[in-house]
Image (cartoon, rainbow, N blue to C red):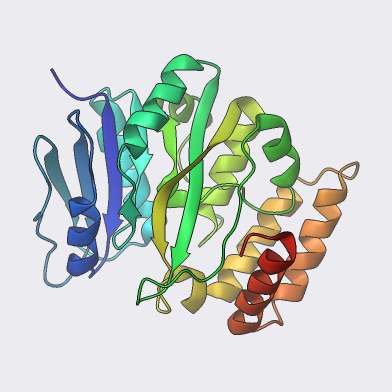
Length: 267
């Protein structure tokens, strides 16, 4: 019987990171892993995936960008009738039982379309950079989404039927395509984060969040304006914060996050 979860991993020129991510998948039930090779040179090879999981590689002839790669993979997955789509990025590591916990939540809460979880952010050496706690309840998430995304993209699992209803990733919000999709889902369905840590997120200095940071912030502002709610203070604060971030260097942002975490007692 085919697994009901497809794990979607877009990859561009990161064979080593992909192998680390695949090796971290620790579940006692079978998964199908769908890797979209976004025009890598040399082509990505599927190595290191533990049993009993199956792997599939979808190859794009040229590098089309993550939004296109994600939608290509989603189309392939939904055509084959998987009930759930889980995300993972090359270089990030799953905690044991992550997919079981997320599927169990969605099975028990049919009104929910999306579930994420808590995340550890680490550098190249595995040192934790800054702790961050993500809201767990739909009510809190619905409000805070106006100020920032409440989900880490490679830590989420989505219900396929909800994706068929709201559509795939938009290509009008480059580097913030996940934020816009999660906002769309939050508007129509209930969403949540597990209180458990489900992922170790590798903060790559060459990754999209840093190298293309200005474009990401501008796209985030577009998302905030699209879903702007004048009655929510978070809508106003989110816009002001994003505009300020355009002028603040990344090291300063990370320093302030660590100071805030100490003040809150997270460190």
